[in-house]
Image (cartoon, rainbow, N blue to C red; front, top):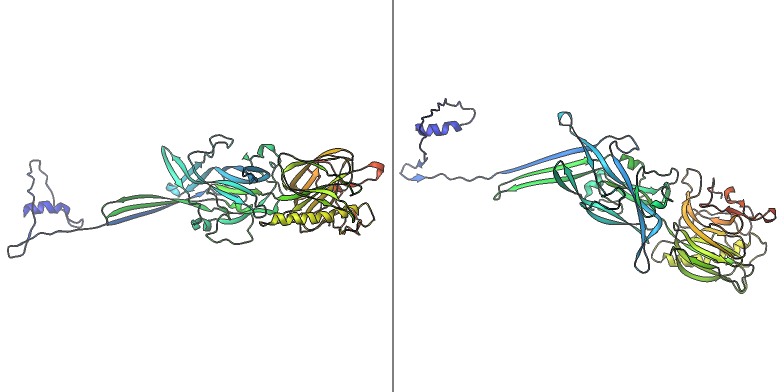
Length: 540
């Protein structure tokens, strides 16, 4: 029994007084004891046992980006903007870039986060390497990416391809950690932590810079105040936080296991991005995505220029429509697509003026050259209706519109009735101008979609389609009418609200200058400049 006591005593519960042990160097180790319980009848019962255990550990770490002043990027957040140009598929299946269209994506270069307090306070600066060089030419190959395609219903031919980071590698001292992001529609947690907002177009100082025609990296990014265009927008998701899970799982024979789970979440100070955007005019469910367009937590769409295609109608007007010759037309750098031609009369009787229609991006820039041996050239821009058959319907509308515009232009300098329906701004028309008459002359035409007023207001729209000659006879070209909305159904601004009766020159002074000074009293219109001079107000 003494041997048994010496074996068991050291392992008794803590609330039992331990016996005093005297360890002697010459003490003899006790023999092993086999404990058996008898049943009184001489039989022996051997005790057996089994056990199971389960242990689960969970830890959540929360970090936040450092505080931020309203409408400013967070302190410690360094960033740049990547300009991504729009693309379009050509009839032969190849893809071309569309001038004057882009999406600007703000990317975080570095951010500072903090977590804990007191002795547990920790401040961390994370640097993100997007490219192998400073020009954005070589994306970081360590990242796993996917691509989303962004389109716009009003201009479905144009699309944008945006890279989204699905996984990145982070170096912490000598340890490389792989972080993966769930950018799918299943991640409703991110929708709830962030905000769905509407990003609208603003002009920028880089829009006419040839260095950014094919996209590029912009640092110190700025928007031009007062140039917001409510008709060009994208609905996007601005994240409020992002998180990732770390799992370490050790298992032995079931049901015995040990599991540890750690989640780390980081709250982002993206309030300045929310302040720069608007609420969308529709709601989105948790499962709806792209739109609203979702990128990874380190990228946000901050500006869009989606552009639009229009139909440009060109014809040469002469003194008589009988035996009229066609204007010579050559397309510059495949910037315009020929649609069809027809003959347009200005009065009853035989004959008409050969007329040509082209589809062109309103942001194409220099797109066509006309050559006329005599007479003047009239250019009209018509909107393209949305929908699969929108182009064909719009082309028919443009043809009918041109047949009404031409007789109306004659009423400005003649009191005779052409005998045909006349309307200087039929449905769909966005812009109509005419050069002065001249002998053989070659003229380059440019089209743009941009700011036209010198104020800071966005109502009525401050952006519009303008199609104009860069040079030609006289000092400029005559403008008849224009609209500011993209569909060509809004308010008409013209020389006269009623083309048949009202003779008032109802145009702002900058667009009502003497352009033909012959004889001291010539035609009035817009003097040559690129772009056309800004006006103070649109006169109705």
